[in-house]
Image (cartoon, rainbow, N blue to C red):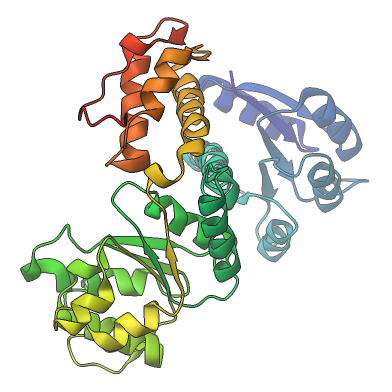
Length: 387
């Protein structure tokens, strides 16, 4: 049961609030003085505190200061009389969550408590997601031991400090998406959004709407990924699929740091960090007239090639165990590892699908395994084994 505490020197108000909130299903306690209330709060740790602004002795602001120092995440809703709204706003600046103005409304009381509790839950979830993302998408999260992959990650780390357009090249499944996220979270824009756009996922007739917005001069209008990414990072996956006219627009944005709306209005400031990925040779495509040569030259100034898995064989055991640990956490399993025959089978395969294919094979094997993964648990979809 959610506990609500009231600190108010008016015994009648405390009793009324207690009755109202208990009907709503809350457990309610109260104190008639600031000094007693602070001690009681520290002992009981309620989920919500309703705190009168005007108290004899230790007033509401002093109580708030003590509570906020003891419990920075406390939900404190101030109670104020007519004419004291400025003080209540000041209390919010000091850390209060919200305020209620007398005469009190039962509906408003319960609404503000429910809203505060819901917002706190959302903030916890948001902070958890931020923490997860910051741990999941870092340079350290890129599993490697091989010299070739270590060198690539060191280059990514170095480039992330430059905030310059970056091209991540490599075969399908080599980890380009993870590398892009790691660069973003290592750079100066890590607190800003990273907007992902797969250039191969949209037909030509709607790609402009998705990337640049619908072009309507007045609301409601759809803004595109470019505007969403302003001050953050725009990740253009499979940029070689992007239409030439869209490439030209991207080039202009990078050169001028402005975006010209399709409806013809004034240019909009647009400061983005561009990360692009490709499996193609952009230089060859530009010679064939299939890719904007200036854009290719710009993003290839800082280019990192991720090696295929067949060139980083000693990373396979590390990656395989990483995927086991990942699945153990996700599905609450206790797979301890691989029997020697199973690991040999992984090492003797060329992995044309690279890290992505290895992950899929390991996760499929886990569904067949008991405690350790045996050779028979591993199914290689393409039987192209290395002798």
